[in-house]
Length: 330
Ligand code: NAX
Image (cartoon, rainbow, N blue to C red; front, side, top):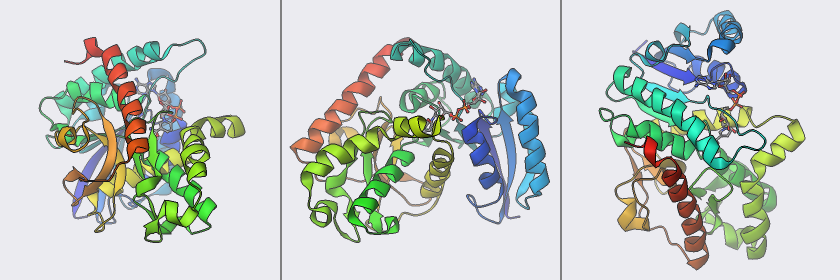
């Protein structure tokens, strides 16, 4: 193998973990010439289940899988990490306020951030999936002075894929032909799927679909509420699609983006203030392009009043989440 990467996955015995690990280990994400050392973190009570997942990984005998470490110890889990996929978190329970959820998870991501700072490689890249992922990523980033701020990401790719799928169904054009489908802002029900800049087979989505009212109403709400619709139908939250989106995010970041294309991921950007009026102190989802190493926010995306209003709403939500955890940010 050309090189070996250490990939840490938290919440590895959970349902997203189960859908993620086998594809990671297969070589599909980092390439067939890259060996993977997997470090899997779980809560003590989930270690027996994680042992079962490890047995299954062993039984796949993947060529690219070099080693598997299972642990409930943060330092062991993040030792020499090249990539940290922070999936595990505490779900919102009945009667729990959003602020309580932010604080419970804030404590988890504070500890994990410190362990990343103390153990991971200097250029470790951190993708937060566990919700509320934008603010969890902000807390994690705040604990890491050694690792560049540009290495922290929160996942909005699932929202992007959901939006693409809705446009494909409505336009009856295959989803592979839909590009530039940006999710702006928070991975929450305030996110803004920007159909005005999306393209269907190279043409504007509005021009192809021709129903602006549907795009402004049903389309946006369907994308924003898709997670809840899946829970209602399946009796469990999205897992395979979330794992697929996490892997797509990594691939988008490590592969040069095609000219004129973009993908969605939440980042902290010092450029965004003058581009779009968004402070770098929040993790905000933008149209992004990568050269395979570094990413940048696509400048000069045209935004009309409707888009600006939607972006403002999701920005305000992120600012209020930031305020709710201000004592954890240092
Ligand atoms: P599960 O409840 O199936 O699994 C979570 C796992 O995390 C459990 O095994 C639990 O023991 C473990 N865990 C909890 N706290 C931990 C800690 N401090 N250290 C290590 N492990 C810990 O949830 P799953 O369906 O896998 O979802 C995981 C997270 O992804 C949730 O927060 C969920 O809300 C979030 N999602 C984020 C999405 C996104 O687009 N950003 C979409 C899918 C998903 O809803």
